[in-house]
Structure formats: C-alpha cells, structure tokens
Length: 305
Image (cartoon, rainbow, N blue to C red; front, side):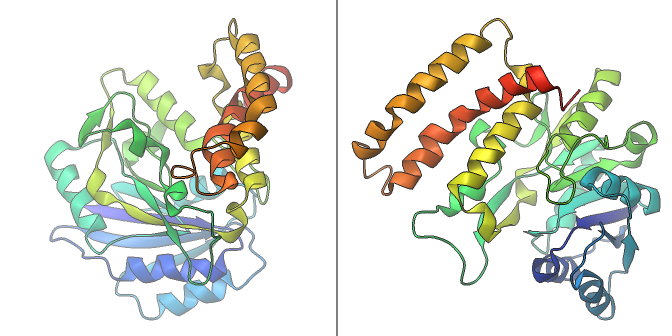
C-alpha cells in the first residue's frame, strides 16, 4: 500500500520545519510505502528553501509543488492530483506527528478499510510564545468534547489537519474552492463539505475515528487573541449556518444579545478558580455565543452557498 502525506502551506516557513522534521522520523510499517508532498500556495517567505533542506536528508521522498491558485482548497486539490497513494493523508503545516502516526493508521486500514480516517489534535505552544491567560487546551480539536470512541462514527467529521482519505473518495470528490481560507482570508468548511457530499452518496459509509493518531497542533501567536477568536467564531457560525433552525434563529440572536449585555458583570463576578483571568471568561463563556450572529449574517449574505 502507498500513502501520500500532503502538507499545504502558505507563508509558514518558520513553522513548517517542525512539521517536516516529525514526518522524517515516521516509522514506515512493513508493506507500506510513503511519500511527502508539500504544496506551496504562493508563499513569499523561505518555504521553498525549508522544503529543499529537509528533502536532502529525509529517507521518505519529499516533493515540492507550487500552486498558483490561492486557497487551501486549490492547494489540497493539487495535492490529490500529484499524489500516487492508495490513501492520501492531509496534515496542517503547524501540526507535528508522533513516530507511530502512520503505523497506527496503517493498522486501521488493514483491519477496517475505512474510506476516511480522522484523529484528534491537541494544542501546543511554540518556544517563547504564549500569553499568561491563554490555556494550551484552547488549541484542542473541538470533537474531543464529544467523547467519540475508536471506530466508525456517524456524527464525526474529520479535520483536514489530521485526515486520511482513500483514493476512491477523490475519484468523485474534490475540495470546493468556495470554502476554506484563501491567503489571509478566514473561511472554513472545505473538509466538512467534502465528507458530507461523499457520505450522502454512500449512505452506508461512516468516518472512522482513531484517537491514537493524535497530533500536536502549534497555536500561532496571532491566534492567541480575543479578537481572532471572535472572528473565528463568527466565521464558524456562518460556515455551519444550516445547523441553526431558521424559525428559532431570531430568538437565539436576541438571547445572545442579552447575554452580551450582562457579560461585563459576569467577567467581574466570575468564578476565579474556573476563570483565573477575565479573558478566560470571555473566551470560554461569551465569545462562543457569537456563532449565532455569524449564522444570522450568513442567511443574508450567503457566502457559503
């Protein structure tokens, strides 16, 4: 079996080395071949030089591609086009894998032959970064809270930051270029919509959740701010607007407005054991409620249709 490990990147040369370093240390199980594909989505930094440096000393072949069309979806589709694997693994450029990451996925493939495999990622901090109030757990994947167990899960959708998909999925599906970040533009949903389309056409299929292929997800300094998280939550609400009932959406917006009005008092009189800093209270209790505003705006402007 052949596995193509694809890393799409944009102006992340300063952190890409951590990802590639971990990939060069992978254990390749017997009966498996691997290749690493790095798709550079028009970076203006030293990305190409970083890839060349690791290519020279990696026992796993590393291939560099430059994708002119801006956007993570275009870059991932380029990776699919260039890959030779029976399975295509997608990994974010700020993620680091353990040496047995591929070995565990290979076990699942041999035993269950899933079309899609996904795993968790947990937050990690780069050296000399971080803020006093920021908790590293804020970088954990959202689905850790849902308590999924190992196996096929009807409700689970893999993150493209840690996902294996069989090549047959890619014969009918591609990442939609309308979704996903483009350069510095924040937008989400490309991997979710790909999986939803595949599953809708294959009613008996389900995504396989493997908790043992956990990856460390470095939290970039600019993401450790309340303003970034507020933008992110608004965008997540827009991306998943269809999950909000249109009949009850006005009520949800009104309730969120009321909560925002009293949130300053909540921050002052918060439980300081649970929320040591006022920023923790806003991050965990207040800002997540902005999703409903993102969903309401999406009903009007239709960016994800």
